[in-house]
Each structure stands twice: as C-alpha cells, then as structure tokens.
Image 1: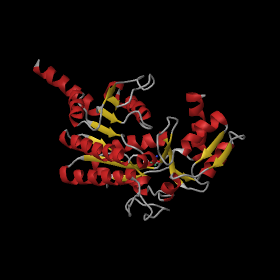
Image 2 (image 1 turned 30 degrees about the vertical axis):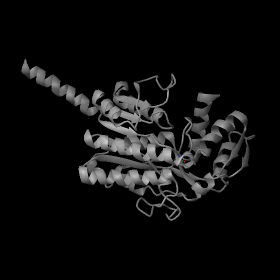
Image 3 (image 1 turned 90 degrees about the horizontal axis):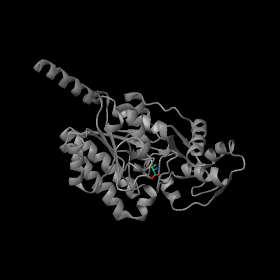
Image 4 (image 1 turned 180 degrees about the vertical axis):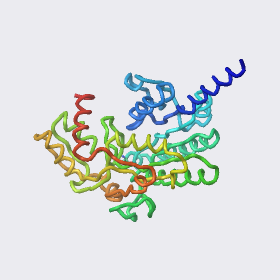
Length: 330
Ligand code: AKB
C-alpha cells in the first residue's frame, strides 16, 4: 500500500540521516587511512570513500571504497559528489610546512586552489566540510605560550598562509552562504603512519628509525617546545567536532591539543623503553619554522564549547607508539 511505501521510505531516509556519506580527500596522507577506519566503524564501510591521486596499498583498500580524486579537477569532484551522494567532505589534501617551502608554486596550487575547489563544491551541494588547520597558522608575532584561539596570525610559511586563508574563507562562506564549515587547528600529530614533509615529523620519525636502528639524528634543537597529540586523540577530536550540533558551536575554527614537549623530553621518555637509543642533533631550516610556532596551545574554547578532552599524555603516547610501530613495522 502507499502507506507501507511511505513508511519504508521514511525508514530509509532515517538510516540515511544517521549515516552521512563521507568523502575524504588526500586520503593516503598521515591522517586519512586511520580516519576512514574510525568513520567506517561508526557509519558503515560503504559510507566512507577514501580518495587520493596516489596508488593505494592493499592495507588502504582493506575495508572500504577507494577512488581516484584530483582536488584540482572541479568537474571530477562534482561527479564524485553526485555519483556517491556525498554529504560530508573531509579535506586532508595539503603540502605540509617543510615540503611547501621547497615548492611554493605547487603548495599554492594544492593548498589554495585545491581548497577553493572543495569549498565551492561544498557550497554548491550543501555539504558539511571539514578542513584541518594547524599550529602552523601562527607566526613570530603571535603569542607563543599560550597561543589563544583568536590572536595575531602572521605565518611565515606558505603552508601557514594557505591555512589562514582556508580559515578565513571558510568562516566567510559560513556567514555569507550558510556553509557548514568546520575547522580544527591541530598540533603535531603523532601516528605510526608516517607523515610527509612537516616540521613536527621528528616526533614520528624517532619511533620508526629509533626502534629499527637504535639511533636518530634530530633536525630540531633539543629545547624546541611544540604542541603535540597522539593520532587517536586527533581523530576523536575530529569525530566529536563533526558530530557537534551547529547551535553548540560558538565559532567555526577551534584550537585543539593534548600536550607540549621538547625533543629532549620526548627522547628521555622513549629512552625509558629503549635505553640504548642514541640521539644526535643537527638542526636545519625546520628549526626556524618551529621557532615561529606556538609552544603551548590554548584549546580551552574547544573544551568549553563541545567538551573536547584528550586521553593521551606523553607517557601514554610513547607506550602506544612503541606498540603501534612494533606491530606495523618490525
Ligand atoms: C607540520 O609540521 O607541517 C604539520 C603541522 C603541525 O601542521 N605536522
């Protein structure tokens, strides 16, 4: 009967409402695969589409759809959003801070032009869009200890400049067009999936190289303090933030963090587990970038507005990373 039909239609639309269909761009970077795992656990494998322009490994393909998507190709993106009925877009594609300085024109294309495409796409198809920002969106004129949510931002890397641009354009599209733009400024994220071309990467590399070879040469000075967080905290912040209702959000861009440490403090904690680990220091250009970034990140607004709470401190992070890296690599 037509009533049955209506009821089953309602049921289907209820299920659809509960499970958004999500596209992740730059899905094979540091955050994508793990982010897809978490979202698939909550929304179903088929509802989370991982995408990138690079070839996936078997592990990337293990639990859900993977497709080619070039963020510089607007029509191609439109096709994906329509064909897969996308509701949410998680835009991870970006050149990070150190690698961006090595190829500024490419960083402008990927980080700025690519972002223009996805934000326009989100507006056109009324998608909820998440774009990560970073401690790198601050610069030498910003207060560094602590760095509040709203303060001076004058970054000196193309990565930072592109992220400030994304923050401002996202806020503008929100106020001007009602776009559901959401953005978290992450600190250095530490995961067993290797990042590429960041300034905080030493805190990942030391686990990989240190556990394998028992030695590590650090490109930052021993006392360079930076905000950091373990991948699980990063993704649970992202998940919780994506699921916060619009009326609870007092702003579209929030600082989040878990801890701050120096290379020396991290290595001392790691040496408790790997006593024969040998560390040497050879600072390079990344030192200048790190020195312009926050040392301690004030994320009290995220904690107040939507209940952000980290689980991992330095000790727990080191224990978990040793476990992750041993499982994945050794
Ligand atoms: C980088 O070091 O560039 C990134 C970041 C902190 O945004 N990890």
